[in-house]
Image (cartoon, rainbow, N blue to C red; front, side):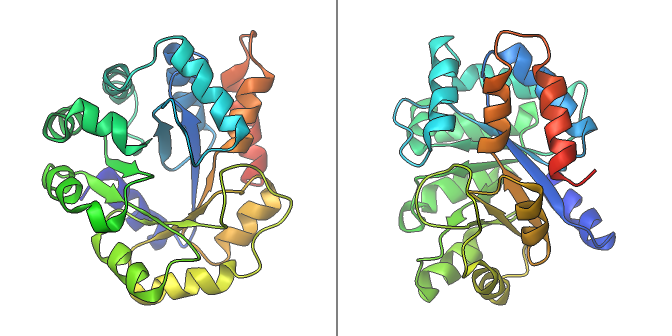
Amino acid sequence: MTRIDEIFSRIRTRRRQAFIPYITAGDPDLQTTYDIVLELEQSGADLIELGVPFSDPIADGPIIQRATERALSNGTSLPQILELVEKIRRSSDIPLVLMSYYNPLLNYGLNQLAEDASKLGLDGILASDLTVEESDQFVEIIGGAGLNTIFLVAPTSPPDRVEKIARISTGFLYAVSRTGVTGGSSQLSIGLVEFIRLLKKYSDRPVVVGFGISTPDHVRAVWREADGAVVGSAIVREIEKNLGGDSIPKAVGELVRRLRGE
């Protein structure tokens, strides 16, 4: 079992749901990312998504796009992020998922990535723009190294595609709450409940929901049906609000506690 499998097993035993923050690695710098990760764990995060900055973030809204620009401007790269994972592992066992577009992964080399990621302490990889139809090599190599392979599944996916995504996803199923890019929303999609229940018919793996989850009410609504809620843009916005100061980790921790209802 990976750390992801273990955390969801514990969560299910305790009959609660996961809180999963997303942050862009290297925003505003890698040391601050490290400090934020440790603060997120102390504030109740169960699993953390580390975003790999990429020059063409087609699925990201403006908040995460700006974070990507900040990370790229200071030279953040995938090798540096893997070094960051190794550093985190000296202080924490919190599950870590690399969230990336496929191009940086291919550029690194899938075989080398699988070897390095497994050795340095990463738990799973989500390639957000990799289609299930073209995923065989990714699943074989990354999954073969003992890492979870995680895929997005959208509410517009037809049943046969949902079934295939559910079959090859490990760790958890990442349900997109709506069509469009990432970013905060005033309300959740009307059909989200039905979508989550459909996914649970196809797989017994945990279902987590992301995209547009930005308030305590959103988190509670997701938790009523799903196994976890992913919050990204709201956290990245908090980082942006505190740029230039020394209080970013503290501000992020306070936000996470509010979102979790503490």
